[in-house]
Length: 481
Image 1: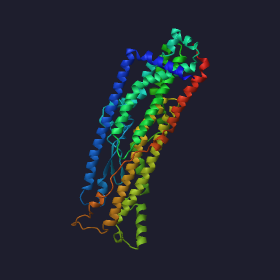
Image 2 (image 1 turned 120 degrees about the horizontal axis):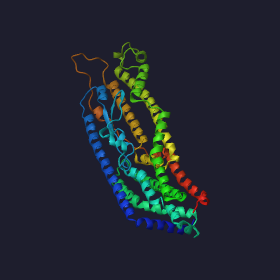
Image 3 (image 1 turned 90 degrees about the horizontal axis):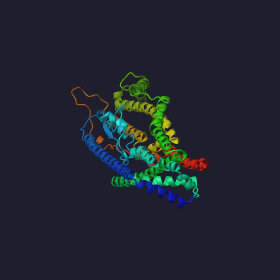
């Protein structure tokens, strides 16, 4: 292919399209929509961050200032962990609005993450929010279809296509030249939004994230450009294969509907039917049933804990738990916490595997649907996919377990084994012991981990671009003027 030919054809597409008044109106309209979505997303993210910081500070102050008390009571007093938004979440809301933002952490119980944005919103949220990513994924392809459906089909109808081909221009040069012209037009909409987003990310960089959000943004912007190039090439290719502009437009609208509505919905339904996930009640019931079989720390006659007591009495050579050199109740609570955490983690891992299997069905359709590929990559890099949410759950559960066992250790070491008389005050320890307990700090998934999780989607986009390029070359002799 000759570059100067491609340049001439691309310039022709630009000049013929940009002079239209409707094109200028669409460029202004889309830029306005994108700017609006970027700003609203950014200020929503900042507001969420401020609220999270405010309530996090109040929770920490309440924890540190809690008066002297029994450490087991402090374990049930609990802690609240808040889920922070990743600095790129303003660009792609992903699943954030439907996932919880705060979780109450206490001994013996693994509570769900609650207070999602959707729980405080109307049912209209089901139709999606106007994010920059949504516009780029759904509406930009429509814009490219409007601009490019007749780029070659119209020339065939007007009889100018034969003239072009008689001037020693190959079909490959024609299709790629028109594609580059259409892609260049799309930059009038993409670049302003990209530059504004990069500026806001730069202003919002924090010490615990460093420059990684900006690096992620470079990846994301590049992949959206590849996605736009794929759609541009597909539009021009179908225009070249169609006998009329009307036929090309019909086929392209059909492709858009299949890619954005039909395939995603079908893959979700197939995934849910192939891999059934339990309800919240079924999940909790299964855990409770297994815990009862293993041992009940609140039942003094439970076989597991009776065996634990007998073994301790034998090791220390005493005949009563009150004669042990440590608080026996703390040992029981420690063992109960270990058992409940093991059971919960096992069931939780199984549930996560089920969800991942459901999502894999959707992910696999990326090889036939570039919309799914860019959607998955966009959510992952923006920190708004399920993997990031699951990582938050894992970190909060690890913190909850550490907190509960720390309080059990305080009870074992600092609380006397002797019972108090009814007239005496209950045992308590100084609040300095929990005031010094470290705060919860959520760490976002690293870029390397995110990219590894989306290798299939990245490969799918590469397959689409290379596949369309190969298709253009292989079909060259079958095109008709």
